[in-house]
Image 1 (tube, rainbow, N blue to C red):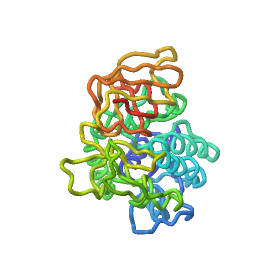
Image 2: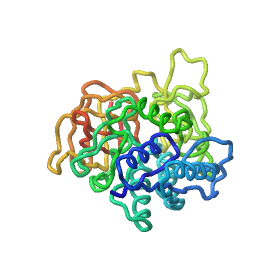
Image 3: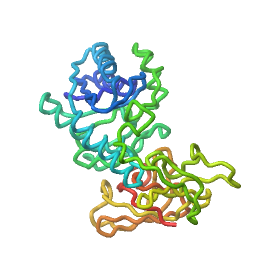
Image 4: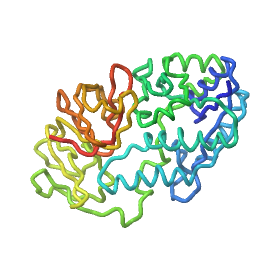
Length: 356
């Protein structure tokens, strides 16, 4: 079988290619080229999907492909990335929501434009990545990885059954510790020691993505509307944030509980005020959930790393209401709510609002 592997330069995608080749498949490495120099991001050697250090990273991937003895193709997708990930990121923040660029990138870029563009250049049967997740039943069953601590099914929960039907995840039934050991034994010990953290841009300051008129100063207030201080732009804040608020002399710790884009206010409240009993979400992606299954029980994840929480859901049209058994902290508009049954994703939706 001919399998295209999305090479990212990390140990997981490299070992995915290594294992597939070892199984006897013809493996081709494919990598997105996203940087076009249109945004003033300084080159400080920081890791990221979009930034001026891309040339070095692409050179490293070419080297990895040679070490694997596989063909490697670089596919330019800068315009698509800006329109579908960066513009989405900016519009969400300007609307007072906190976006998840990795989820959007997976949905539209890696498992969309990259596969489609690669098919125009190459002949292959399946697409593989180093994601820790499992897929079966012709794409309808997306399952959590065997290594739960590394599971990435949440980031893949927006993929359609059609997208999942043409992919494979070699890391899904592996432990991260075993992959690092295998990499060392196979001569890729340098990648096993490579730091995993990678942002979607090579910069900690997201303000470089915005126009100056998009970032307006405003008030920081409490839930009663009392002014506590001032902010330099809503884009610098997210629900649940405690550090970096610049507010001193408080009787108790306060957190960001709301971003009011209409009043251009950052609203602070107590930890108790961060909790909500329910949420509403839109743009439902049904995987195992049938078209006529509009209510039931599920385990719900509201952010990566968050434990699954028991809840009941109800769907009317394209709106899903999720009522939790126990109140949840920092339900954040713009993030994904992923519904699970046992270890499989039932469906996912984009959070609109938290309901107290």
